[in-house]
Length: 219
Image 1 (cartoon, rainbow, N blue to C red):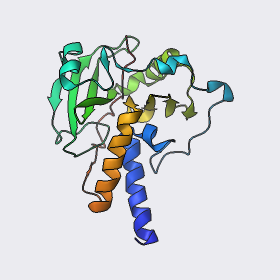
Image 2: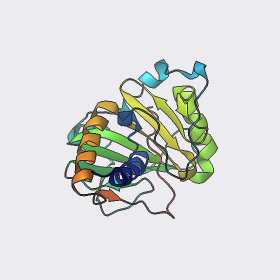
Image 3: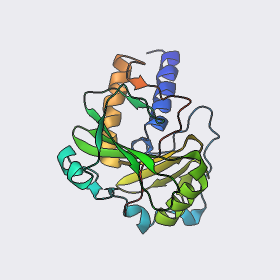
């Protein structure tokens, strides 16, 4: 493979990883091409016990089957691959999407849509899409719940835990979390598919749609 081809693959992969909230598997912050390079958080912002409490969305735990998650979140509805949300997604036979409409998150003024992503039938990620007018409230809520960010920037903070990673894309209007172990599996599939058929797996998000927020803090 030529160096130029490697660069093209790397660029597409980086954009996907940022959009799909896969920084956990990547082992570092992956920012969109237009973003300002991430600044390191103060040394005191090391991952603490509050980050370890991030085990899923509400009573639906990471690794839960769709049936188990539905018992915990009976209002979740199927979300087809052709429906665009603020956070980009990709097409895969292993990925299933669901959504909670008008979900109430304590601390935010307006109800939110919450996307739930399952990889190979197991809860992998949740994304909370909040109103952009709730940006400050959302960032304060995350810091109050999980402590100071471990890396990233003020409007794109990242909390990296041993089992899960939480990331916010503040200006895009979403925050979300992923299970690290499941992210690794999804990442392996994505890169293999990208090399086999470059550009065929990423479904761009709607640029004009308010972005989704990755996950609401467990209640």
